[in-house]
Amino acid sequence: MTNGPKRILVACGTAIATSTVVAQAIIEAMKEKGIEVTTRQCKATEVSTLVKEGFDLVVTTTPVPDDLGVPVIQTLAFLTGMGKEEAIEEIAQALQT
Amino acid sequence: MDALLTAIKAVIDNLGATVVLPIIIFLVAWALGAKPGRAFRAGVMIGIAFIGINLVIGLMWTSLTDVGQAMVDNTGVQRDIIDVGWPSAAAIAFGTSVGLWVIPIALGVNILMLLGRMTKTLNVDIWNFWHFAFIGSLVAVVTDSVTYGLIAAAIAAALALFLADWTAPAVQSFYNLPGISIPHLTTAPGVPFAIVTNWIIDRIPGLRDIKADTETIQKRFGTFGDPVILGLVIGLILGILGYYNAGDLQTILVSVLQVGMNLAAVMLLLPRMVQILMEGLIPVSEAARDFMQKRAADREIFIGLDSAILIGHPAAISTALVLVPVAILLSIILPGNRVLLFADLAVIPFVVALFAPLMRGNIFRMVIAGTLTLLVGFYIATGMAPLVTGAAADAGFTIPEGAAQITSIADGFLWPPFLFATLTQLAGVIGLVVVLALLAVAMYFYSRNRKGWEVAAGAPAGDVEAAAAD
Image (tube, rainbow over all chains, first blue to last red; front, side):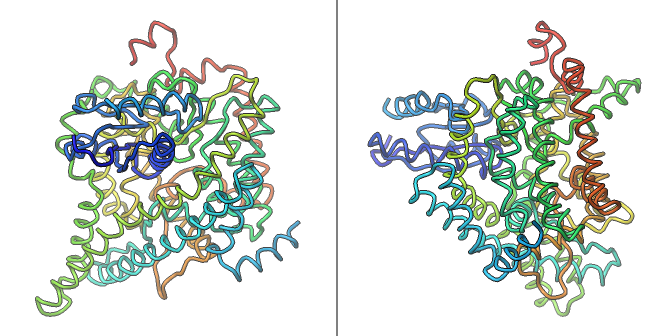
Protein backbone atom coordinates (compact mmCIF):
# COMPACT_ATOMS: atom_id res chain seq x y z
CA MET A 1 0.00 0.00 0.00
CA THR A 2 1.04 3.61 -0.53
CA ASN A 3 2.05 5.81 2.35
CA GLY A 4 -0.55 8.56 2.04
CA PRO A 5 -3.73 8.73 4.09
CA LYS A 6 -5.59 5.45 4.52
CA ARG A 7 -8.62 5.17 2.26
CA ILE A 8 -11.86 3.96 3.75
CA LEU A 9 -14.96 3.13 1.74
CA VAL A 10 -18.09 3.76 3.81
CA ALA A 11 -21.25 2.06 2.58
CA CYS A 12 -24.94 2.23 3.45
CA GLY A 13 -28.23 1.92 1.61
CA THR A 14 -28.16 5.27 -0.13
CA ALA A 15 -24.64 6.71 0.26
CA ILE A 16 -26.44 9.65 1.84
CA ALA A 17 -27.89 9.06 5.25
CA THR A 18 -26.19 6.67 7.63
CA SER A 19 -22.90 6.58 5.71
CA THR A 20 -22.48 10.32 6.25
CA VAL A 21 -22.81 9.84 9.99
CA VAL A 22 -20.33 6.96 9.97
CA ALA A 23 -17.81 8.70 7.70
CA GLN A 24 -17.79 11.85 9.83
CA ALA A 25 -17.42 9.83 13.02
CA ILE A 26 -14.51 7.82 11.59
CA ILE A 27 -12.67 10.91 10.37
CA GLU A 28 -13.03 12.53 13.80
CA ALA A 29 -12.04 9.45 15.77
CA MET A 30 -9.02 8.64 13.58
CA LYS A 31 -7.83 12.24 13.75
CA GLU A 32 -7.75 11.91 17.54
CA LYS A 33 -5.68 8.76 17.16
CA GLY A 34 -3.32 10.48 14.76
CA ILE A 35 -4.27 8.25 11.82
CA GLU A 36 -4.80 10.17 8.62
CA VAL A 37 -7.79 8.89 6.63
CA THR A 38 -9.91 9.87 3.69
CA THR A 39 -13.37 8.43 3.23
CA ARG A 40 -15.62 7.92 0.28
CA GLN A 41 -19.30 7.12 0.63
CA CYS A 42 -21.15 4.71 -1.60
CA LYS A 43 -24.21 2.52 -1.80
CA ALA A 44 -23.98 -1.13 -0.79
CA THR A 45 -24.56 -2.11 -4.42
CA GLU A 46 -21.49 -0.17 -5.54
CA VAL A 47 -19.03 -1.61 -3.03
CA SER A 48 -17.76 -4.51 -5.12
CA THR A 49 -16.98 -2.20 -8.08
CA LEU A 50 -15.53 0.72 -6.13
CA VAL A 51 -13.36 -1.34 -3.82
CA LYS A 52 -11.10 -2.15 -6.80
CA GLU A 53 -10.00 1.49 -6.86
CA GLY A 54 -7.71 0.73 -3.95
CA PHE A 55 -9.29 1.07 -0.53
CA ASP A 56 -7.71 -0.12 2.69
CA LEU A 57 -10.93 -0.86 4.52
CA VAL A 58 -14.69 -1.07 4.00
CA VAL A 59 -16.97 0.09 6.81
CA THR A 60 -20.67 -0.54 6.24
CA THR A 61 -23.99 -0.23 8.07
CA THR A 62 -25.73 -2.76 5.84
CA PRO A 63 -24.76 -6.19 4.43
CA VAL A 64 -22.17 -6.19 1.62
CA PRO A 65 -20.47 -9.12 -0.17
CA ASP A 66 -17.67 -10.62 1.93
CA ASP A 67 -15.24 -11.58 -0.86
CA LEU A 68 -13.88 -8.08 -1.43
CA GLY A 69 -10.22 -8.72 -0.73
CA VAL A 70 -10.00 -5.98 1.93
CA PRO A 71 -11.17 -6.05 5.54
CA VAL A 72 -14.89 -5.33 5.99
CA ILE A 73 -16.34 -4.00 9.23
CA GLN A 74 -20.13 -4.02 9.48
CA THR A 75 -21.22 -1.92 12.45
CA LEU A 76 -24.13 0.12 13.73
CA ALA A 77 -22.12 1.48 16.66
CA PHE A 78 -21.78 4.96 15.17
CA LEU A 79 -25.55 5.14 14.77
CA THR A 80 -26.65 3.67 18.08
CA GLY A 81 -23.78 5.03 20.16
CA MET A 82 -23.35 1.62 21.77
CA GLY A 83 -19.99 -0.12 21.34
CA LYS A 84 -18.58 2.92 19.57
CA GLU A 85 -15.18 2.71 21.31
CA GLU A 86 -14.76 -0.92 20.30
CA ALA A 87 -15.67 -0.12 16.71
CA ILE A 88 -13.12 2.70 16.64
CA GLU A 89 -10.46 0.33 18.00
CA GLU A 90 -11.35 -2.27 15.41
CA ILE A 91 -11.06 0.26 12.60
CA ALA A 92 -7.75 1.61 13.91
CA GLN A 93 -6.35 -1.92 14.11
CA ALA A 94 -7.54 -2.84 10.65
CA LEU A 95 -5.79 0.24 9.29
CA GLN A 96 -2.51 -0.39 11.06
CA THR A 97 -1.98 -3.95 9.84
CA MET B 1 -51.45 29.22 20.42
CA ASP B 2 -52.28 29.83 16.76
CA ALA B 3 -51.93 33.60 17.09
CA LEU B 4 -48.44 33.22 18.51
CA LEU B 5 -47.50 30.68 15.87
CA THR B 6 -48.89 32.92 13.13
CA ALA B 7 -46.83 35.82 14.42
CA ILE B 8 -43.72 33.65 14.52
CA LYS B 9 -44.54 32.40 11.06
CA ALA B 10 -44.69 35.97 9.74
CA VAL B 11 -41.17 36.64 10.99
CA ILE B 12 -39.99 33.29 9.70
CA ASP B 13 -41.49 33.88 6.26
CA ASN B 14 -39.58 37.13 6.10
CA LEU B 15 -36.26 35.54 6.93
CA GLY B 16 -36.81 32.31 5.01
CA ALA B 17 -35.91 28.77 5.95
CA THR B 18 -32.26 29.28 5.03
CA VAL B 19 -31.92 31.70 7.95
CA VAL B 20 -34.47 30.40 10.43
CA LEU B 21 -33.65 26.71 10.29
CA PRO B 22 -29.95 27.28 11.18
CA ILE B 23 -31.00 29.35 14.19
CA ILE B 24 -33.48 26.71 15.36
CA ILE B 25 -31.07 23.83 14.77
CA PHE B 26 -28.41 25.72 16.74
CA LEU B 27 -30.81 26.27 19.65
CA VAL B 28 -32.12 22.70 19.62
CA ALA B 29 -28.63 21.16 19.48
CA TRP B 30 -27.42 23.46 22.24
CA ALA B 31 -30.45 22.76 24.44
CA LEU B 32 -29.88 19.02 24.04
CA GLY B 33 -26.31 19.41 25.26
CA ALA B 34 -24.11 19.86 22.18
CA LYS B 35 -21.16 22.25 22.55
CA PRO B 36 -22.12 25.75 21.34
CA GLY B 37 -19.40 25.86 18.67
CA ARG B 38 -20.43 22.51 17.22
CA ALA B 39 -24.11 23.41 17.46
CA PHE B 40 -23.46 26.68 15.63
CA ARG B 41 -21.58 25.01 12.79
CA ALA B 42 -24.39 22.46 12.52
CA GLY B 43 -26.89 25.25 12.03
CA VAL B 44 -24.80 26.97 9.36
CA MET B 45 -24.26 23.69 7.47
CA ILE B 46 -27.99 23.11 7.39
CA GLY B 47 -28.58 26.58 5.99
CA ILE B 48 -26.00 25.89 3.29
CA ALA B 49 -27.63 22.57 2.47
CA PHE B 50 -30.94 24.35 2.05
CA ILE B 51 -29.47 26.83 -0.39
CA GLY B 52 -27.88 23.96 -2.32
CA ILE B 53 -31.03 21.88 -2.43
CA ASN B 54 -33.03 24.90 -3.56
CA LEU B 55 -30.62 25.41 -6.48
CA VAL B 56 -30.82 21.79 -7.58
CA ILE B 57 -34.60 21.62 -7.22
CA GLY B 58 -34.79 24.78 -9.33
CA LEU B 59 -32.74 23.12 -12.08
CA MET B 60 -34.80 19.96 -11.95
CA TRP B 61 -38.10 21.76 -11.75
CA THR B 62 -37.35 23.99 -14.75
CA SER B 63 -35.95 21.19 -16.93
CA LEU B 64 -38.77 18.80 -16.15
CA THR B 65 -41.53 21.40 -16.42
CA ASP B 66 -40.33 22.51 -19.86
CA VAL B 67 -39.84 19.05 -21.27
CA GLY B 68 -43.04 17.82 -19.60
CA GLN B 69 -44.99 20.63 -21.23
CA ALA B 70 -43.44 19.93 -24.64
CA MET B 71 -44.27 16.26 -24.20
CA VAL B 72 -47.91 17.03 -23.38
CA ASP B 73 -48.15 19.16 -26.52
CA ASN B 74 -46.65 16.38 -28.62
CA THR B 75 -48.23 13.27 -27.24
CA GLY B 76 -51.29 14.47 -25.36
CA VAL B 77 -50.10 12.45 -22.37
CA GLN B 78 -50.56 14.67 -19.34
CA ARG B 79 -47.78 14.16 -16.79
CA ASP B 80 -47.62 17.51 -15.05
CA ILE B 81 -46.79 16.40 -11.52
CA ILE B 82 -43.03 16.09 -11.13
CA ASP B 83 -41.45 13.55 -8.82
CA VAL B 84 -38.80 15.73 -7.15
CA GLY B 85 -37.55 12.96 -4.92
CA TRP B 86 -37.27 12.37 -1.21
CA PRO B 87 -34.25 14.65 -0.75
CA SER B 88 -36.44 17.53 -1.88
CA ALA B 89 -39.41 16.28 0.13
CA ALA B 90 -37.25 16.11 3.25
CA ALA B 91 -35.89 19.61 2.74
CA ILE B 92 -39.38 20.93 2.13
CA ALA B 93 -40.73 19.16 5.21
CA PHE B 94 -38.00 20.52 7.49
CA GLY B 95 -38.44 23.99 6.02
CA THR B 96 -42.17 24.45 6.67
CA SER B 97 -43.57 26.09 9.80
CA VAL B 98 -44.30 22.58 11.10
CA GLY B 99 -40.85 21.28 10.22
CA LEU B 100 -39.14 23.95 12.30
CA TRP B 101 -40.55 22.44 15.49
CA VAL B 102 -40.60 18.79 14.59
CA ILE B 103 -37.41 17.74 16.37
CA PRO B 104 -38.44 18.81 19.90
CA ILE B 105 -42.00 17.56 19.31
CA ALA B 106 -41.03 14.09 18.14
CA LEU B 107 -38.44 13.74 20.92
CA GLY B 108 -41.12 14.76 23.42
CA VAL B 109 -43.58 12.19 22.07
CA ASN B 110 -40.89 9.50 22.25
CA ILE B 111 -39.95 10.30 25.85
CA LEU B 112 -43.59 10.38 26.97
CA MET B 113 -44.33 7.07 25.27
CA LEU B 114 -41.23 5.46 26.77
CA LEU B 115 -42.17 6.70 30.24
CA GLY B 116 -45.75 5.53 29.73
CA ARG B 117 -44.47 2.11 28.55
CA MET B 118 -46.32 2.59 25.29
CA THR B 119 -43.26 1.90 23.17
CA LYS B 120 -39.94 0.08 23.41
CA THR B 121 -38.30 2.10 20.66
CA LEU B 122 -35.89 4.96 21.26
CA ASN B 123 -35.91 6.76 17.93
CA VAL B 124 -32.44 8.27 17.50
CA ASP B 125 -32.92 8.71 13.77
CA ILE B 126 -33.43 12.47 13.98
CA TRP B 127 -32.90 12.88 10.26
CA ASN B 128 -36.05 10.88 9.49
CA PHE B 129 -38.20 13.11 11.63
CA TRP B 130 -38.78 14.80 8.27
CA HIS B 131 -41.49 12.19 7.59
CA PHE B 132 -43.46 13.47 10.58
CA ALA B 133 -42.89 17.04 9.42
CA PHE B 134 -44.04 16.04 5.93
CA ILE B 135 -47.35 14.74 7.27
CA GLY B 136 -47.71 17.72 9.59
CA SER B 137 -46.96 20.13 6.75
CA LEU B 138 -49.67 18.63 4.56
CA VAL B 139 -52.19 18.82 7.39
CA ALA B 140 -51.15 22.44 7.98
CA VAL B 141 -51.83 23.22 4.32
CA VAL B 142 -55.20 21.41 4.44
CA THR B 143 -56.44 22.98 7.67
CA ASP B 144 -54.57 26.26 7.31
CA SER B 145 -53.48 25.82 10.93
CA VAL B 146 -49.93 25.29 12.10
CA THR B 147 -51.21 23.95 15.43
CA TYR B 148 -53.10 21.11 13.72
CA GLY B 149 -50.01 20.46 11.64
CA LEU B 150 -47.91 20.12 14.79
CA ILE B 151 -50.45 17.76 16.37
CA ALA B 152 -50.46 15.68 13.18
CA ALA B 153 -46.64 15.52 13.29
CA ALA B 154 -46.81 14.31 16.89
CA ILE B 155 -49.32 11.58 15.98
CA ALA B 156 -47.13 10.58 13.03
CA ALA B 157 -44.16 10.24 15.39
CA ALA B 158 -46.24 7.93 17.60
CA LEU B 159 -47.37 5.94 14.54
CA ALA B 160 -43.72 5.41 13.55
CA LEU B 161 -42.90 4.12 17.04
CA PHE B 162 -45.84 1.72 16.95
CA LEU B 163 -44.85 0.37 13.52
CA ALA B 164 -41.25 0.07 14.72
CA ASP B 165 -42.21 -1.96 17.82
CA TRP B 166 -44.50 -4.19 15.83
CA THR B 167 -41.92 -4.99 13.11
CA ALA B 168 -38.90 -5.11 15.45
CA PRO B 169 -38.78 -8.91 15.99
CA ALA B 170 -39.08 -9.48 12.22
CA VAL B 171 -36.28 -6.98 11.51
CA GLN B 172 -34.09 -8.37 14.25
CA SER B 173 -34.34 -11.98 13.10
CA PHE B 174 -34.44 -11.58 9.31
CA TYR B 175 -31.79 -8.88 9.05
CA ASN B 176 -29.86 -10.09 12.09
CA LEU B 177 -29.92 -6.73 13.87
CA PRO B 178 -30.35 -7.39 17.60
CA GLY B 179 -31.78 -4.48 19.59
CA ILE B 180 -32.73 -2.47 16.50
CA SER B 181 -36.12 -1.30 15.23
CA ILE B 182 -37.07 0.80 12.20
CA PRO B 183 -39.36 3.79 12.95
CA HIS B 184 -39.16 4.92 9.34
CA LEU B 185 -42.33 6.10 7.63
CA THR B 186 -41.25 5.17 4.12
CA THR B 187 -40.49 1.58 5.01
CA ALA B 188 -42.75 0.53 7.88
CA PRO B 189 -46.11 1.44 6.26
CA GLY B 190 -45.54 -1.24 3.61
CA VAL B 191 -46.00 -4.03 6.12
CA PRO B 192 -49.84 -4.19 6.20
CA PHE B 193 -49.80 -4.07 2.40
CA ALA B 194 -47.35 -6.94 2.25
CA ILE B 195 -49.32 -9.01 4.76
CA VAL B 196 -52.46 -8.79 2.62
CA THR B 197 -50.57 -9.51 -0.62
CA ASN B 198 -48.84 -12.47 0.98
CA TRP B 199 -52.13 -13.85 2.29
CA ILE B 200 -53.69 -13.65 -1.18
CA ILE B 201 -50.69 -15.22 -2.95
CA ASP B 202 -50.70 -18.08 -0.46
CA ARG B 203 -54.18 -18.95 -1.66
CA ILE B 204 -53.44 -19.03 -5.39
CA PRO B 205 -52.11 -22.42 -6.58
CA GLY B 206 -49.14 -22.10 -8.89
CA LEU B 207 -48.38 -18.51 -7.95
CA ARG B 208 -47.61 -19.48 -4.39
CA ASP B 209 -44.80 -21.82 -5.46
CA ILE B 210 -42.86 -19.32 -7.56
CA LYS B 211 -39.51 -18.17 -6.23
CA ALA B 212 -37.10 -15.76 -7.87
CA ASP B 213 -33.36 -15.82 -7.44
CA THR B 214 -31.54 -12.62 -6.56
CA GLU B 215 -28.25 -12.91 -8.43
CA THR B 216 -29.58 -13.15 -11.99
CA ILE B 217 -31.78 -10.16 -11.28
CA GLN B 218 -28.89 -8.05 -10.03
CA LYS B 219 -26.89 -8.88 -13.14
CA ARG B 220 -29.68 -8.23 -15.63
CA PHE B 221 -30.98 -5.02 -14.14
CA GLY B 222 -27.69 -3.69 -12.78
CA THR B 223 -27.49 -0.56 -14.94
CA PHE B 224 -30.81 0.68 -13.57
CA GLY B 225 -29.10 0.83 -10.21
CA ASP B 226 -26.82 3.68 -11.24
CA PRO B 227 -28.80 6.88 -10.67
CA VAL B 228 -26.64 9.05 -12.94
CA ILE B 229 -27.11 6.78 -15.97
CA LEU B 230 -30.78 6.41 -15.06
CA GLY B 231 -31.18 10.21 -14.95
CA LEU B 232 -29.38 10.60 -18.27
CA VAL B 233 -31.46 7.94 -20.01
CA ILE B 234 -34.76 9.26 -18.66
CA GLY B 235 -33.72 12.77 -19.63
CA LEU B 236 -32.86 11.70 -23.18
CA ILE B 237 -36.12 9.78 -23.59
CA LEU B 238 -38.20 12.66 -22.25
CA GLY B 239 -36.16 15.04 -24.42
CA ILE B 240 -36.88 13.04 -27.56
CA LEU B 241 -40.60 12.80 -26.74
CA GLY B 242 -40.76 16.52 -26.05
CA TYR B 243 -38.50 18.00 -28.70
CA TYR B 244 -38.39 15.62 -31.69
CA ASN B 245 -40.26 18.21 -33.73
CA ALA B 246 -38.72 21.33 -32.17
CA GLY B 247 -37.03 22.55 -35.38
CA ASP B 248 -33.99 21.56 -37.42
CA LEU B 249 -31.76 18.68 -36.42
CA GLN B 250 -29.27 20.85 -34.57
CA THR B 251 -31.93 22.47 -32.36
CA ILE B 252 -33.44 19.10 -31.58
CA LEU B 253 -30.10 17.56 -30.74
CA VAL B 254 -29.09 20.43 -28.47
CA SER B 255 -32.43 20.42 -26.60
CA VAL B 256 -32.47 16.66 -26.13
CA LEU B 257 -28.87 16.40 -24.96
CA GLN B 258 -29.32 19.33 -22.59
CA VAL B 259 -32.30 17.73 -20.89
CA GLY B 260 -30.33 14.50 -20.55
CA MET B 261 -27.33 16.21 -18.97
CA ASN B 262 -29.43 18.41 -16.70
CA LEU B 263 -31.30 15.45 -15.30
CA ALA B 264 -28.13 13.37 -14.92
CA ALA B 265 -26.69 16.33 -13.00
CA VAL B 266 -29.72 16.45 -10.71
CA MET B 267 -29.35 12.76 -9.90
CA LEU B 268 -25.76 13.31 -8.74
CA LEU B 269 -26.12 16.75 -7.14
CA LEU B 270 -29.31 16.25 -5.15
CA PRO B 271 -27.90 13.45 -2.95
CA ARG B 272 -24.68 15.46 -2.46
CA MET B 273 -26.69 18.40 -1.14
CA VAL B 274 -28.54 16.11 1.21
CA GLN B 275 -25.23 14.77 2.51
CA ILE B 276 -24.51 18.34 3.63
CA LEU B 277 -27.87 18.44 5.39
CA MET B 278 -27.06 15.14 7.11
CA GLU B 279 -23.66 16.42 8.14
CA GLY B 280 -25.35 19.43 9.73
CA LEU B 281 -27.78 17.22 11.61
CA ILE B 282 -25.10 14.96 13.11
CA PRO B 283 -24.40 17.10 16.20
CA VAL B 284 -28.14 17.36 16.82
CA SER B 285 -28.73 13.66 16.51
CA GLU B 286 -25.72 12.79 18.69
CA ALA B 287 -26.87 15.22 21.37
CA ALA B 288 -30.44 13.92 21.13
CA ARG B 289 -29.25 10.33 21.35
CA ASP B 290 -27.27 10.95 24.53
CA PHE B 291 -30.09 13.03 26.00
CA MET B 292 -32.64 10.29 25.36
CA GLN B 293 -30.43 7.39 26.37
CA LYS B 294 -29.74 9.00 29.76
CA ARG B 295 -33.47 9.22 30.36
CA ALA B 296 -34.26 5.68 29.31
CA ALA B 297 -31.17 3.99 30.67
CA ASP B 298 -32.84 1.41 32.92
CA ARG B 299 -35.18 -0.01 30.31
CA GLU B 300 -34.96 -2.71 27.71
CA ILE B 301 -35.17 -0.58 24.61
CA PHE B 302 -34.78 -0.92 20.87
CA ILE B 303 -32.72 1.70 19.13
CA GLY B 304 -34.73 3.07 16.22
CA LEU B 305 -32.62 3.56 13.10
CA ASP B 306 -32.91 4.55 9.46
CA SER B 307 -34.07 1.79 7.11
CA ALA B 308 -30.93 2.58 5.06
CA ILE B 309 -29.30 -0.14 7.17
CA LEU B 310 -31.61 -2.72 5.56
CA ILE B 311 -31.10 -1.69 1.96
CA GLY B 312 -27.90 -3.67 1.39
CA HIS B 313 -29.84 -6.93 1.66
CA PRO B 314 -29.95 -8.69 -1.72
CA ALA B 315 -33.73 -9.14 -1.48
CA ALA B 316 -34.35 -5.41 -1.15
CA ILE B 317 -31.87 -4.48 -3.89
CA SER B 318 -33.12 -7.05 -6.39
CA THR B 319 -36.77 -6.24 -5.84
CA ALA B 320 -36.08 -2.55 -6.34
CA LEU B 321 -34.12 -3.20 -9.54
CA VAL B 322 -37.08 -5.03 -11.04
CA LEU B 323 -39.52 -2.41 -9.80
CA VAL B 324 -37.76 0.53 -11.49
CA PRO B 325 -38.86 -0.43 -15.03
CA VAL B 326 -42.23 -1.57 -13.63
CA ALA B 327 -42.73 1.84 -12.03
CA ILE B 328 -41.80 3.66 -15.24
CA LEU B 329 -44.20 1.46 -17.21
CA LEU B 330 -47.00 2.07 -14.69
CA SER B 331 -46.43 5.82 -14.84
CA ILE B 332 -47.02 5.69 -18.59
CA ILE B 333 -49.97 3.31 -18.83
CA LEU B 334 -52.05 4.09 -15.74
CA PRO B 335 -55.15 6.06 -16.78
CA GLY B 336 -55.62 9.22 -14.77
CA ASN B 337 -52.07 9.25 -13.47
CA ARG B 338 -50.36 12.63 -13.82
CA VAL B 339 -47.08 11.83 -12.06
CA LEU B 340 -43.88 12.00 -14.09
CA LEU B 341 -41.52 9.67 -12.22
CA PHE B 342 -37.95 10.81 -11.89
CA ALA B 343 -35.86 11.47 -8.82
CA ASP B 344 -37.39 8.90 -6.49
CA LEU B 345 -36.81 5.85 -8.66
CA ALA B 346 -33.82 5.44 -6.34
CA VAL B 347 -36.00 5.22 -3.23
CA ILE B 348 -37.85 2.04 -4.14
CA PRO B 349 -35.66 -0.27 -1.99
CA PHE B 350 -36.87 1.67 1.06
CA VAL B 351 -40.48 1.02 0.16
CA VAL B 352 -39.98 -2.75 -0.11
CA ALA B 353 -37.31 -3.49 2.53
CA LEU B 354 -39.78 -4.58 5.22
CA PHE B 355 -41.66 -6.88 2.85
CA ALA B 356 -38.67 -9.19 2.98
CA PRO B 357 -39.06 -10.76 6.46
CA LEU B 358 -42.69 -11.83 6.05
CA MET B 359 -42.17 -12.94 2.45
CA ARG B 360 -38.98 -14.76 3.51
CA GLY B 361 -36.98 -12.78 0.96
CA ASN B 362 -38.98 -14.13 -2.00
CA ILE B 363 -38.34 -11.54 -4.71
CA PHE B 364 -41.33 -12.64 -6.78
CA ARG B 365 -43.74 -11.84 -3.97
CA MET B 366 -41.94 -8.66 -3.04
CA VAL B 367 -42.20 -7.41 -6.62
CA ILE B 368 -45.95 -8.08 -6.66
CA ALA B 369 -46.50 -6.30 -3.33
CA GLY B 370 -44.25 -3.45 -4.52
CA THR B 371 -46.15 -3.13 -7.77
CA LEU B 372 -49.45 -2.90 -5.88
CA THR B 373 -48.00 -0.29 -3.50
CA LEU B 374 -46.80 1.81 -6.43
CA LEU B 375 -50.03 1.35 -8.37
CA VAL B 376 -52.09 2.73 -5.51
CA GLY B 377 -49.34 5.28 -4.90
CA PHE B 378 -49.70 6.94 -8.30
CA TYR B 379 -53.30 7.86 -7.48
CA ILE B 380 -52.48 8.96 -3.94
CA ALA B 381 -49.69 11.13 -5.32
CA THR B 382 -51.84 12.60 -8.08
CA GLY B 383 -54.45 13.53 -5.48
CA MET B 384 -52.02 14.95 -2.92
CA ALA B 385 -49.80 16.92 -5.33
CA PRO B 386 -51.47 20.31 -4.65
CA LEU B 387 -50.80 19.82 -0.93
CA VAL B 388 -47.15 18.88 -1.44
CA THR B 389 -46.70 21.85 -3.76
CA GLY B 390 -48.37 24.05 -1.13
CA ALA B 391 -45.98 22.76 1.50
CA ALA B 392 -43.03 23.58 -0.78
CA ALA B 393 -44.30 27.14 -1.10
CA ASP B 394 -44.65 27.32 2.70
CA ALA B 395 -41.05 26.20 3.04
CA GLY B 396 -39.95 29.07 0.81
CA PHE B 397 -38.80 27.03 -2.16
CA THR B 398 -38.80 29.00 -5.37
CA ILE B 399 -41.53 27.70 -7.61
CA PRO B 400 -40.79 28.57 -11.23
CA GLU B 401 -43.47 30.46 -13.11
CA GLY B 402 -46.05 28.20 -14.75
CA ALA B 403 -44.38 25.23 -13.10
CA ALA B 404 -45.85 21.84 -12.68
CA GLN B 405 -46.94 20.49 -9.30
CA ILE B 406 -44.61 18.26 -7.35
CA THR B 407 -44.62 15.00 -5.43
CA SER B 408 -42.22 12.21 -4.47
CA ILE B 409 -42.52 8.47 -3.93
CA ALA B 410 -41.31 9.00 -0.37
CA ASP B 411 -43.71 9.87 1.11
CA GLY B 412 -46.14 11.30 -1.46
CA PHE B 413 -47.07 7.79 -2.69
CA LEU B 414 -47.76 6.29 0.72
CA TRP B 415 -50.87 5.83 2.83
CA PRO B 416 -49.92 7.57 6.08
CA PRO B 417 -49.76 11.10 4.61
CA PHE B 418 -52.83 10.30 2.53
CA LEU B 419 -54.77 9.12 5.57
CA PHE B 420 -53.88 12.24 7.57
CA ALA B 421 -54.53 14.63 4.69
CA THR B 422 -57.81 13.04 3.61
CA LEU B 423 -59.30 12.78 7.09
CA THR B 424 -58.41 16.37 7.98
CA GLN B 425 -59.71 17.52 4.63
CA LEU B 426 -63.03 15.80 5.32
CA ALA B 427 -63.43 16.59 9.00
CA GLY B 428 -60.80 19.11 10.14
CA VAL B 429 -59.67 18.54 13.69
CA ILE B 430 -62.06 15.59 14.04
CA GLY B 431 -59.97 13.93 11.34
CA LEU B 432 -56.98 14.13 13.65
CA VAL B 433 -59.01 12.63 16.48
CA VAL B 434 -60.00 9.77 14.17
CA VAL B 435 -56.37 9.09 13.20
CA LEU B 436 -55.35 9.10 16.85
CA ALA B 437 -58.24 6.75 17.71
CA LEU B 438 -57.26 4.37 14.89
CA LEU B 439 -53.69 4.33 16.18
CA ALA B 440 -54.89 3.70 19.75
CA VAL B 441 -57.09 0.81 18.59
CA ALA B 442 -54.21 -0.75 16.64
CA MET B 443 -51.92 -0.38 19.66
CA TYR B 444 -54.55 -1.94 21.92
CA PHE B 445 -55.03 -5.02 19.76
CA TYR B 446 -51.28 -5.32 19.33
CA SER B 447 -50.73 -5.25 23.10
CA ARG B 448 -53.37 -8.00 23.50
CA ASN B 449 -51.69 -10.33 21.01
CA ARG B 450 -48.09 -9.27 20.53
CA LYS B 451 -46.81 -12.61 19.31
CA GLY B 452 -49.54 -13.01 16.70
CA TRP B 453 -48.98 -9.54 15.27
CA GLU B 454 -45.24 -9.93 15.23
CA VAL B 455 -45.35 -13.29 13.46
CA ALA B 456 -47.72 -11.77 10.88
CA ALA B 457 -45.09 -9.09 10.23
CA GLY B 458 -42.49 -11.77 9.60
CA ALA B 459 -41.08 -12.63 13.02
CA PRO B 460 -40.20 -16.31 13.39
CA ALA B 461 -43.03 -18.30 14.96
CA GLY B 462 -40.59 -20.31 17.08
CA ASP B 463 -36.90 -20.42 17.81
CA VAL B 464 -36.30 -23.38 15.50
CA GLU B 465 -37.80 -21.57 12.54
CA ALA B 466 -35.70 -18.51 13.24
CA ALA B 467 -32.65 -20.30 11.92
CA ALA B 468 -34.52 -21.72 8.94
CA ALA B 469 -35.84 -18.35 7.86
CA ASP B 470 -32.43 -16.78 7.79
